[in-house]
Image 1: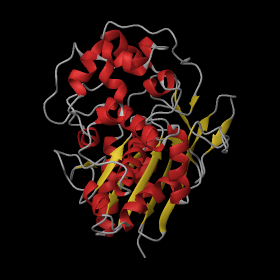
Image 2 (image 1 turned 90 degrees about the vertical axis):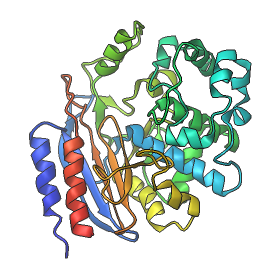
Image 3 (image 1 turned 60 degrees about the vertical axis):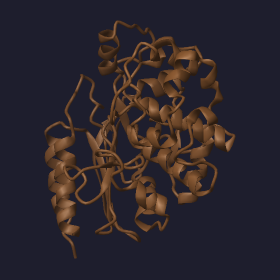
Image 4 (image 1 turned 90 degrees about the horizontal axis):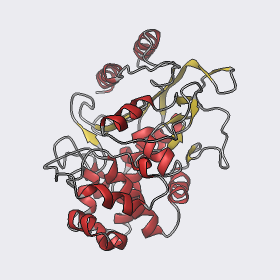
Length: 354
């Protein structure tokens, strides 16, 4: 019997230091949950204090990207897409924007998945809220340099979300529901209030103070910020919330630990050559959607989310880890980076399971 009490000690240590107010951890193999525990409590928008349990849903932030990449890979396996497909073939709207087409005409699905498209790291689309997505993209892309090599960019996954919706012929949130059903998962959704239990959700943040500074540093402005006085239930990411109405390929999903455990288990059990390939390094520190690197994913792969969630899959030793935390859910700006916590959990679980 493995002793998972070390995860207890690590999590309580970091929580007591103020790294996050609450957490849910799940450790599993290809068949079973080996360990799952909830920690802490949260202040909710109505002023009540709510203890976290194993079914509490958290903002998945950029861990949303693994749901997006999984859907892309499954569409490729079904013969509906190819890694080498140029996105201008799938999204013809790009062709009518001169600057955008010039920059994206050779970009492929592979490049979007691996963040090698040459697109800059970030732009606040919501500063032009109300305009068409492709028109906003056109407005700034011609003034930016082509980035060599791997550059992590949310815009790659904005485009992949649009690709999924176009190929499947329905909205992205409906496409995610298809994945949820295929996984046999419970609470996994954009806009959790739509048809699912919204009561048991951990707050993700208070406003968007970090993004406010990022916008100001770029000489831009936006007047629609959420209040910093109330905890936010749901999506933290600014572009997803303000511009995409909480549904995008880059962020926006809320989920309970069990749902992402099922997603990770798909990769522990798959025999698809493409899904297996996705977990290996294709570009520096990048698989097809997945992050790789011994520092955070010993002998495996995973993904992080800005507001705190983290997933880790190690097929070699047949285990996965989901840690849901909400590091930004404090009433004063709180920039504690959870990297040290993630590395401690990764090292502990890897040592137990190898």
